[in-house]
Amino acid sequence: MVVVERARNPFHILKTQRNFRLFWSGQTLSLIGTWMQSMAQGWLALELTNSPLLVGLVASIGALPIVFFSLPAGVLVDRHDKLRLVTIGQALLATQALLLWWFVWTGHITIGWLLALAAMNGLVASLEIPARQSLIIELVGRAELGSAIALNSSGFNLARVIGPSVAGLVIARLGLAWCFGLNAMSYSMVLLSLVMIRLPRWAADASRPTAWAGFVEGLHYMRSTPEVVFLIRIVMAYAVLGVPFIALMPVIARDMLGTGAGGYGLLLGSVGAGGLAGALVLAGMLHHVPRMTLLPRACMAFAALLLALSFVRTPVLAYPILFGAGFSMIVNSAVANELLQTVVPDAMRGRVMALYALIVIGLSRVVGAFAGGVVADAVGIDWSIGASAALLLGFTAWIFSRPPAALPVSPPGEPTPGDVPLVVPVQPE
Image (cartoon, rainbow, N blue to C red):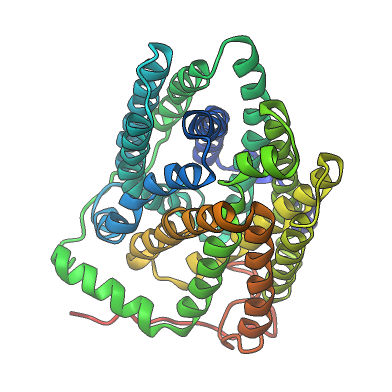
């Protein structure tokens, strides 16, 4: 009876896990501000340059530090107090938002300053993201990891629904600058929640290898573990070919659908509403649906919906397609994230999550968004989206024709008869 109740109530973990409740509440409130800033930044880049290529560049430049520094940062995450790293990172992100507000409010903003501040955000995120991803299991334990990841995605997408809608009103009433100012203020909520979290005192592992040895050990583990290689390939394909459509949404809104800033906010809100629905459904049904049934269906649905979007020319048709794309995108990413965190040993978690961040944030923007911007600039945004979607459909058919047999199917701690136990040895130095 307890299992059935948990399966139907996606919020059960907020009732039972105080630390995660604090973390989720603060993160969700702060993410509303983050999405306001994200929308305003994309629109500001379009206003400053009138170039799809430079809109993609602004998204890409913020991810360059993640590409270069995430893997070394993952070693630091595995060697230091994750809660402390996340707290420092959030304080620095608040500072970046405050600087962005000041430049726009005083009229000193240029495309150069916008690129520089986006790069600052990426530098901080290269450490903060793997630390935050690795922290979740410490807040809830392994048995609740899947539900926590799904619910964390619901908070992200709830913010994606609210943030752009609020940003549209703020831009109309107060101007672009205050999207950045309100985001800076929102960080006070997440910082307060992080200070209130209580975890066992962190202690360094006396037997840990040197930083360089830990870096090499992490690369060897990820390269030699078939389950990790399989999941990383999926994450990489969808990050580079699929997710960048969000970074190019200002161009989709203006050039393909003919809307202004308000319509742009509604388009982002549709993606967020779908993602929120997907995350809540996933959190509620996670204990009953086999992972390797859910993942390929979500991947195929997302690619098919992106292909459909490339043919749409009216917002009324785009809204439901983007809702479905948001739904399938979050199911895809949450299941892949949970499977990765389930198969890796605790000692490797920071390094694997660093690679995950490098791909999902770094390559998604540096390669995906920039390449999408280049193609859109040359032949149109519709061809850019359609070609990416077609490649994704072909990749999905290929990758799921040969999945590793040892991937876990059931939630952590609840094996089903068909599951193959997975024990991954960590090679000693």
